[in-house]
Length: 94
Length: 379
Image 1 (cartoon, chains in turn orange, green):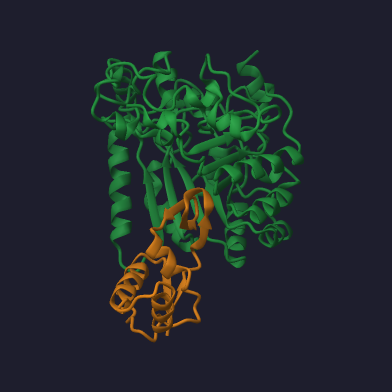
Image 2 (cartoon, chains in turn brown, red; image 1 turned 30 degrees about the vertical axis):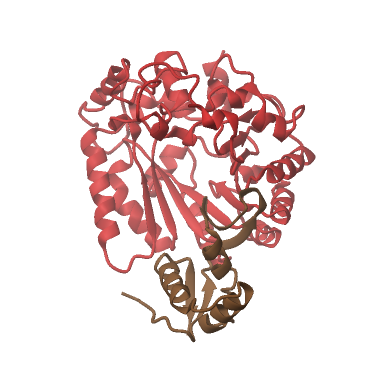
């Protein structure tokens, strides 16, 4: 109904209903929300920790490609952000 | 195979029952009916040590409950320490005592979320069920929660006397701006166990409530999430209670006893440790109160050889004990249990004709949770 268009210029941020943090005991990033927790795999954690509402998806992709010395992540990042928006983990700012 | 017994993960969910004091007198409360006979509450420093030690073990979700946690005047100190340690902090409250000064102080201390209980959508039934005049106050607290931008979960315990109001309860929650609603069918422990026959709904009531919840969920444009906690007496398989005892959940009672579930205090023959003289590490990994029901070595038939034991862990130990007298039996909710008839008989009793609206009169009176009734039950 309210599907926001996602493109490389979109600026994703963790939704205010969630808190992202690193959990040493689980060796993973987690999303915390009222009485619940989602344990993230490492790529989900790496993408979400860069979603600060200021960086665009293009910036995030470039940063990831540099950090992990790779290329061609754009499609994967956009697909993941779209899924995260669908799950309401992330809100996208125009 | 008994993998869990060898290497439990962290106690991800820590519930601190800060006090048994409560201004409400709810007939379905799970607190022990003998709460007036239980020793003195932990001091502030004890709670702060519990937080530090549990966080070091990997605890991350923190529930602050009771009784009414706002009855402790050091709640803000406890929240501040928990926030500093990195807990996600849930306050589970009746709303009584939550004025603007305290809600602002809790926000500043780092409280993440407030779960507010309502007893019903109507003032009359809310106030009757809690034996207090609190409906208007709760509505004002809901507005304060929104004003201070907390995510708000509305929790309503369902039973025979209010389950027909699910539609109105959901409308009320929507009006108050709740992000989540928990429609929690009564689980029969503590005061609720004592009042079970008066609280048990009929099957038709449960089905109508589920249908009303489904209709509400299917309407367009409702951001509110609705959880319907199923009434296990009406099921044929037990709930995976606490994901197995000693697996993720750890409760500390007001007097410092460490429990693998908030009702476990009643289980006989288990020595539950106290945080006054045990470290959280010892409690979680070594104490018999936590290791005894971890894994599946304790199981009897039909659970022991059951292929479903890895999914439901034999159900609830407290329910097995309350209904059969042996906590190691299968939860009688399971229709493979030789004691399943105890559950179906309780459900059959609920099929009796309902007394119309006015006052919920019945053969046995409802017993409200109060210090006076606690003393009376155990005198």
